[in-house]
Length: 250
DNA sequence: GGGAATGTTCACTA
DNA sequence: CTAGTGAACATTCC
Image 1 (cartoon, rainbow, N blue to C red):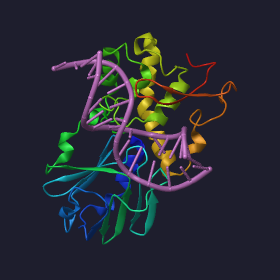
Image 2 (image 1 turned 135 degrees about the vertical axis):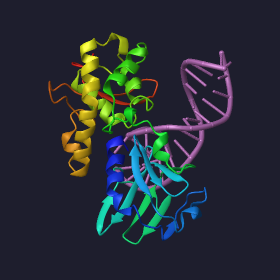
Image 3 (image 1 turned 60 degrees about the horizontal axis):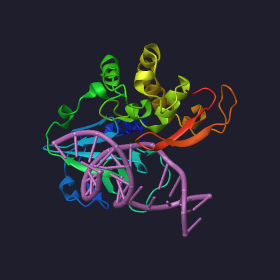
């Protein structure tokens, strides 16, 4: 689940703020009982982290690769991106106005009454506080890195996932293994500038359930620009799937 | 039954 | 110590 999807989830769960946890269930092994009766003070996202703030601690939920959720919020039903899911939730929380079930998620406690302060939102690709100039600087600081690995680095581009990465590189005709230092300055600048724009679009597509209609290269057979057969291969140190137009992406 | 899947962390090695 | 690697995790579907 990528940043924009997590941001969307955090938004959907805003009505839980001010509500008390009436019941907890699930497989999580790290003492979910402490949530019983606690009031949700805040719900926010940072990159791929979904954070529920309680009085003296927060709960960090990460959907990882195959995680997802199902929720009912004030009568509306929602679900996460990934349709496959285990039979039992990692964590289920019941509120007076709804219920949230997370599946295959990694959960972690943050022992802080204001976990939000621990996050730097200027590196969050889905945040209004995103700092593009600083991101460009960070990219240039490591010219030997492949552009694909650089973009997937969550410390520099938090929330940016494999789909966004694939789509962005295709749009700028850049091969994922291309070294950052070998990319023309103008192109690199353009990529960084487009990242938050892509993220906003992704967010809207997810929200309106039209996500895959807007994919240009990810899981596509042919390049929509030139018609070449798309090559699917594992790339970079991150060893993630890349969809590449062999004619255009250099 | 092997491989896939929008991700991260940790143990281990050189 | 650091950088790089590979496994682990989790789980269902085809």
